[in-house]
Image (tube, rainbow, N blue to C red; front, top):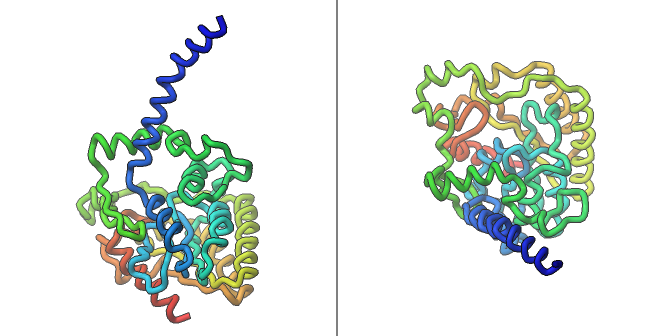
Length: 311
């Protein structure tokens, strides 16, 4: 009886397990910057001098290929300062020659909730960077990428293997040259259509409780960087004018006040504030209202590179 029960369980669960293993294999076969960064960390960690942290805004804006100092960009979509901090602490022992840390501080960074210990990308960081952001002991399943967000990765599998899109063209530094197919491109860079867009992703809801929580961690991060004798560049990224016009002035002023305070308090902190410096950026330099395209990234990376060389 017991043997039959075990057999039935095996017959029931085996297809499920095999199915998940197939989906995991397909997920790992999709090209990503995480894979390339993993290889660089394995082969070039000792050479890295500049580390870039932040969300998709700075991920899109900094192409390490155009940096004179060996640079690792581990920014990714929806990555907040609490995750940045955990990644920094996890990777620093391997980055023996790190001198500079670039940190994105977007317009509403301080009033959006942190990722927290249950952020789905924690499995990605564990798998590719061997950094535990779960704030607990990890288990085998924590390294399974597909299980971290099945709906998301099912869509990516559909796009990559069946629809054959979106196209990717990653360079050796994890930057995707093919990532030009954003909202502006979809509108064929039609200025009238772009100007007519009434809604896009921007936070305009003040949250003083979140602001207090986030600034407290931000100060801990800056204290840590000072103790490690690392140079810090706090960055804002060029935004399209319609994004700038929708910013809430109270959220903006609080963010700017923290940046000014940080520069005055910490001698190792410099500010590179280009959020409103967009005169030399063309329409095709933007992916959407808040992200740069590869051509825009070239301009921004050149500015960052020049800034580092001059300080």
